[in-house]
Length: 507
View 1 (tube, rainbow, N blue to C red):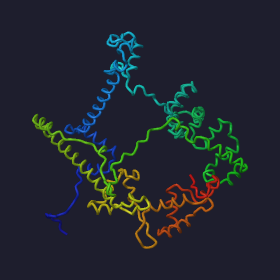
View 2: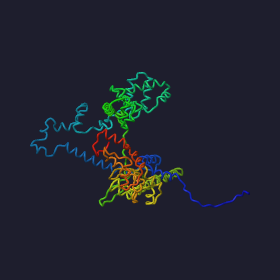
View 3: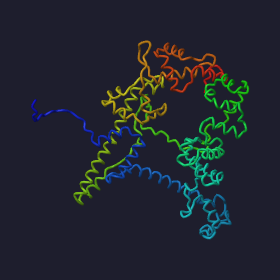
View 4: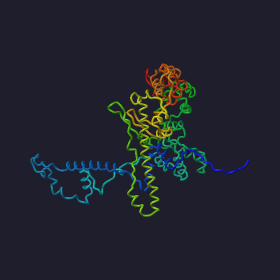
């Protein structure tokens, strides 16, 4: 077989992923915080990008107008009325005899600090030089780490123990539990394990009681030990907390060798303990969810979908600076041309991102109109393909748009992916049911069950099938476990122990 060279022409299609196209795809799936951070980085790198300060100036002008009105009102309140002498039938100086017009006009003595402070306080104002910022008046909240370190300085006079204690305190999480391993700590610090255990024992005596524990049983035991209530029966119950969680009273009585009355007292005492003592000193503030889309009901009975303009970064391209700087040379022109292209691309991508989110959210509202009118029971089965075909986009684009995006509705704030649920067939051959609506139906059945008639999974399947929902028992069990609802046996024990009346739901 001879090898020869030849020239062929072939035609094909291929998608070239340019860096800008890759960034445009990433912008779609970014959350509000990620998008704001990305835009900040671009503002620092690109000299042609600048913030749109028009809205900021408008807000500042409104604040200045309000402040000016408040100052004018304050001046009118401080000044004496023009007709005060006529209303009081005397001169104004006679009313305030100790404070004549000359005294009021004279400045306060600069060396009299008390008088100056009193005058400022009485006027409700501070001088600019003596003004105190609001931040300087705020007290610093002591966190758990600092609270333990302060106690460590007193409890451990030895420098080595303080070093070990500081290392262990760094391993304690915000709930007060020690998240490290003693053998690993001994290797890092090159000390015997028994020394680590000795220092840990000192930390476990710190305030709050129970801090430094490695397990829930140890945390509760430390608190009971301080109360002198850690007897053998209590230790047996703490060693079998899984039985306590299942409310298996019979097995607990056999393990602890106590009567039903004593076991009830032990459980009542355990309930008074704090399973997370470290939270007493607070934790990191939880960031509230900022919706990307608002859905409002109109007067005609429909729904209006609009973007949350507060979450959209506003950037502009400074073409005037580009025109002025390009005249300085070829190198500057080449650099600024790239910056101009990137800036124009970013502005266009942000606009396209906003339009895509609005288009997807509008179609979701149209598809799930029953949910917005009647609630979760009317939530329909929906997948990405339906939305993609309706708006003429690819499924991957819809998936990226719905990631980390939230919608504020009259029924609450939901993630966009919440409206995409699988379908469950109807037993009567009609329209399929949404999995989320079925889960809501299961929860309603369990919440409304009587203590004397606990619904098993099989019984729930029968009720759902009578309602037209064709579902298997294992699916009911899966949904129930996903909602963290105990089994029928555990619910029966819980409701009997609590003594709930008929029809009352367990907490």
